[in-house]
Image 1 (cartoon, one colour):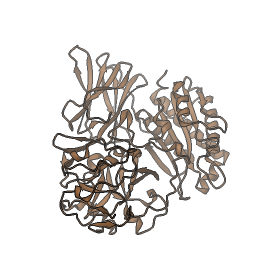
Image 2: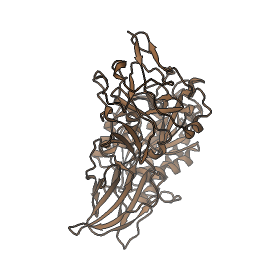
Image 3: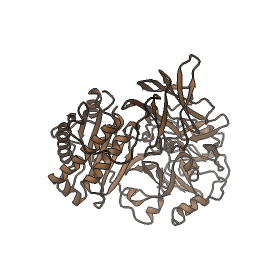
Image 4: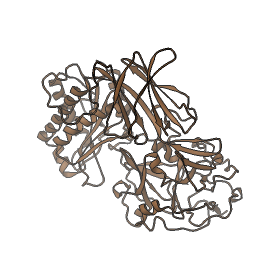
Length: 583
């Protein structure tokens, strides 16, 4: 039996923004056949995926970033749980009118107008996937923030909804551009390279996608999408339920059948900062200036501080609830942090601090525009700077006394990590960690190693090691890798908001010490820095796959300079932020 693939005709309007992004990519926006009748059981995709090396960030699959899972539950659905969709119902189920020109063939997928009142065939999707988190046949329109998308969305069975969202992406804190070939997997050459584009996110690696493929790549790691992006006319239609968790966006259905996408407040943290308390709020989209905590008195007479994030939804759970809930335990004179939406979605998320006594404070700048930082203090003592400018100084004997620092040498045992021409990552990380341990102990710190020999430890084992000991700091050392031997430089990663200062102080000194290209400080979802409770960083000292940098990693003098730099960074951090949460 022939397989019929049809898509409803959608109204089009001019997209100057899209043409500006892709004016130099004629193949990407080229129209394709109107209706496709494919003999046999399946159809071939419009674009064949190139060979994919798919290296894990540190050379092993266990170290990969876990995507689609946001702190405190996260919005919508895990993206990496999707499977390839199966064939849908017969073409007669579609009632939206004549199918349009510009519709590519995707294997085993029936498309329909999402505003159609008929449901998709119940055979979609396979049991392993399950339906989308929202009833797709209820979706009539798409809205991003307060801006409605003019075009009618398309339904892909009951897997996903496609809509042209390129112009609306900035409302979610992202932009769409032609893909940087350094981010594209495999050996991609023109014209295939013109099928790739990327969604850029603040302080995170871009999401690379390709027309007609239900795959995405983040740091060259493959993620399965619920549906493939398409070009219809001159517009890119993106799979909403596939992308929402990767963007940290909330996707909720209102009573009129409009699927509303908004940025979210993802997490709140309360932690000690020297003689006072810091509060950080992480969002999925850069935060506008001018936000301030305001004071109020509760009916019982207790004191509170609150801040409103207008246009941001609750990112703490995947349900439709806007109910207030406790989102962070307290510290010091801050009893707890709560968050909720006092107005109807998509209104405002309010973060409230319950206080033991009346407190004031001030907003502090951070290098990450998606983090709002606030330091509370009594009127008698102004707060210290959360992210200061300039270097504090060099360490002195015993300046780290009283600190418990866990050091983590990446990989080990059968897990070699990335491989250079002559050496393995696991050996370099252990050498650097042992040198760093000696430095920190000489300055009075209590230093414990997740591994001190060439043995394998799971990621969870490393996290448990640090958490059960209630370490003040966690530092994991790795070496970077790339298929491109010219890739080079030093990079530092953090995940939790309380780790921003540690990342900045260490990287400033580390980058100077290595003398290599400065790849900067970035937020990433690496397991060991996401699951540890204390300020945590992961250092990518150099590229073991770069011949010159592999040679430097084998140089004792250079390695000692590197750990001396890290030591200075730790010392600077301790002078600014104090010696940890458990002192």
